[in-house]
Image (cartoon, rainbow, N blue to C red; front, side, top):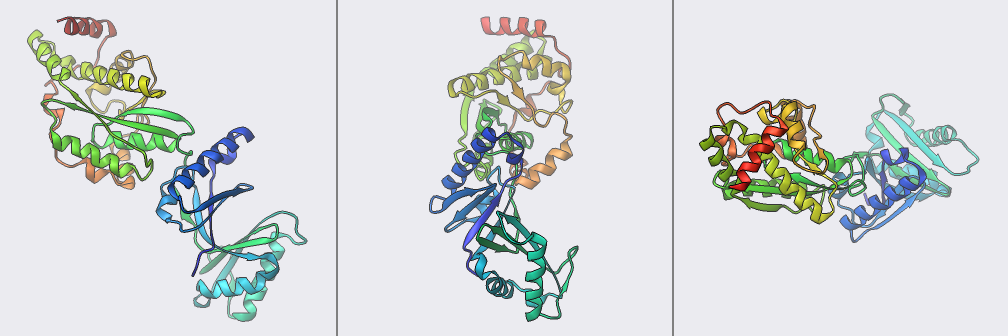
Length: 365
């Protein structure tokens, strides 16, 4: 059956003040228009309509879209004739129970309930065996009546929800290629942040396969942010620092010092790109560098906010999201990592003054 038009619904945008709602609607419409260049995207009283050759995947991965439906458009004056034809095409004849859901906007000489009852009676003249069941119908037909037009649909597909991409600004993401950082990027995208993913290739612990894994994950996440582009930074400073720490017998601080170094790289990229902070996949107490004491010391390394959307999640919760968004299998690819460089007994508590003292020594040599 030919689809005349697509109905796109949003949810969270409704909660905002009028100026913010209009602004976010504009952002969402631009996002949809960019994704569907051969389509016409318009709005009307809390609804977004798309006409043209729609790829449903583009709606499925656009943040801000709560749900969407392919619709058949008809004139209100022809509603009985058109609804009977549409119901036949969409399988009402195979059902024994049905329900009509009417949503009405505008001034009309009938209520939504009255229209649903009248149309239900009309359908039963063709299918007298049908019974109305509003709780658990075998066939469910939705009717949107907007002024003198009506729209029929039987399917409601979920979108990703959230806030339109770009509504909250830009963040730099430290992307390791593991399980956590892709989920953190996804979660901040869902809250309206455009992401600049940065993979820091630490020689000699990482190789080309490590970088390739990071790239594959970013390519996968492009379905949510089409302009997502990975920045790769080759870095030898972490290894040089670790050798110096080992000589001094204080390599237990290696992980904290490494993270502070990476934070500063991300901060510098963010400063040049106008980003409003850094996002990481850190979760409280997951590893030694992510204790409350060490996170406190890490934040002290930069002068921008560090956002950690997974801070209260356990690993299984993060894995569940990674599986849902399709990054888990990529993240568990076996590639060289810096895990082999983790000290036997890494420091779980650090003090800013001590870390600053060590850094001053390292970077002055």
